[in-house]
Image 1: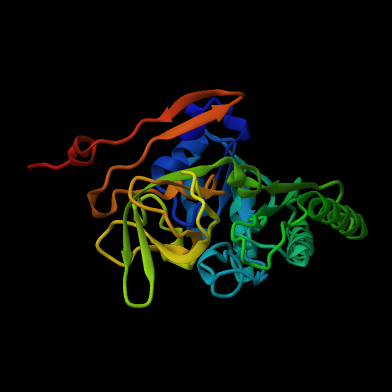
Image 2 (image 1 turned 60 degrees about the vertical axis):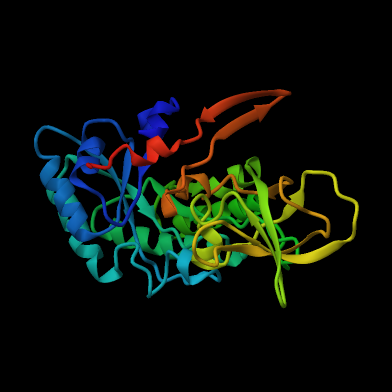
Length: 335
């Protein structure tokens, strides 16, 4: 719905997820979604049943090809311990279901291995494994038009970290060359390489503004409490995501190490960083590179309203999402 409201054509939309509802599968079958990345045998069977009533659907098979990327376990989406993708033991069953249901058009194979990945070799390993999978499906009579290596291209957001930005263009070029060469060697025809660059496109487009509510100098640490936290950005609490934060309000004293915290009734730490010693209540802080997986993950934790979203370009600004009120948060209460 979000993509459609933004004006994306249905043929450009791919539906992902390890647990899709019947409503979502129906949407794929009535033309509201261009392609569905099927994540399991049971899902494929449900899609086949739903699509028999005069509907069709374009299908990619999301596979677990065993590539274990070097990233935080909570954002790793491939490998033996991941819930995502079809296990190799189920590939023949998937091929049989597709062959028995011609209303499902097989478009190719897909594997997403994780998020915040800085190692090109992981993508090349994924591409190689997918071409091998495409060869197996070709032996079942299913030709892959596309080989999709996913996304998760790492974007640096921690100024103290040792990561450098992944060269996405070079990585994609290397993966494309590998797929082209391997597909030719295996007699698979011209399979197109697909990528899902999400974060690499929008991470740096977002900046979150916080207002300081309190500065607490405790025995061993100084805490700066802001008017946000885990409710609108759960990533630091979920898997230790770190961000670069700068003071917007002009300050001139030397920096000190502080712990930035939200205002919820837990530790709610947003990270340890350096800010000017004189930062105080009312000051504005800017958290950079929050364009990906921040507002989309926001909730009403501790029943806090979500913040507004404003788009800024070429000296102009436009409200994209209004600030919630407490009445919005209470709207669905039945008493």
